[in-house]
Image 1 (cartoon, rainbow, N blue to C red):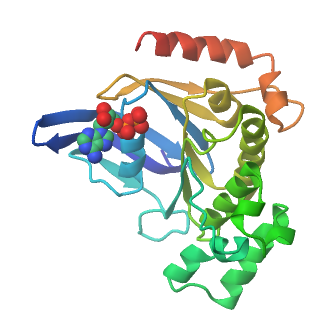
Image 2 (image 1 turned 90 degrees about the vertical axis):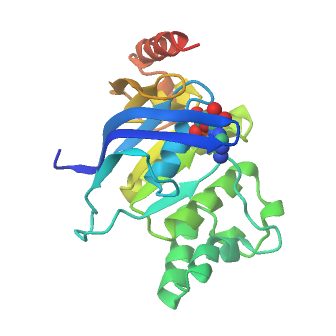
Length: 256
Ligand code: ADP
C-alpha cells in the first residue's frame, strides 16, 4: 500500500525466562497509513505494549518483518516518539526545561529548536506556564507538556501507551480531545493503545482489535463518525457511535 508509513507482516514475539516461554504476539499483520490515527484495543495482558515496543524498535520481533516508508523520503526507519501513562516530568525543572530535556540529551538544544519548543508551548496554551514547575500545573496541563516534550523531537510516528489512564474521567475526556486535536493539526501519524472503547472510537480513524495472548489481529474496524465538531462530546453523540461501541464490545467479549 503506497500511503503506508509502516506495514507489519506476520510479526511474532515471545518472552523467555528461566521458567519457560511466554508467547506474546502471533502472526500480526496490519499497515499504518501516513497521518492516520490508529487505535489498538485488546484484552489486558494480550501483548499491546509489546507490539508498541516492537514498532518503536525497542524489541526485535522473533518472526516477521516491518516494511516502512519514511515521510521525508530517506531510507531510515520513521522516527518514533513515545507517550506513556505517567508524564514523567521532572519536578525540579521548569516546564520549558522539561519540554527541552530530550533536545538537551540528544545535543539538539539549538536556538532554533528551543524556539520551536516555545512555539509549541504557545500554540497549546502553556507558554505562560513555561517558567513554572510541574507541581504547579493540573494533570491535563502536565499531559499536554509531556506531549510537547515528545513533539519537539519531531517524531514521524507518535506511540501513545494508555496516555490518559492516570487522569480522572472528566479531565481525561477533555485532555484526550485536546491531544487528539493537536496530533491531527500537526499531521502526525499516531498509534494509541487504550482499554477505553469510547476513547478509541472518538479518537481513531481505524481500530485494530487484538485477540487474547498471544495477540493476533481479530478484526480491523474503520471509524467514520458524523460530527459537528472535533470535541469528545460531538464524537460520543455521533449517530454511529453506539453501533461501533456494541461491535467492539461483542468482539472483545469473545476474548474474555
Ligand atoms: P498489554 O500491554 O496488552 O497489557 P503486554 O505487552 O504488556 O500486554 O504483555 C503481554 C504479556 O507478556 C503479558 O502476559 C506479560 O505478563 C508478558 N510480559 C510482558 N513483559 C514481559 C517481560 N519483560 N518478561 C516476561 N513476560 C513479559
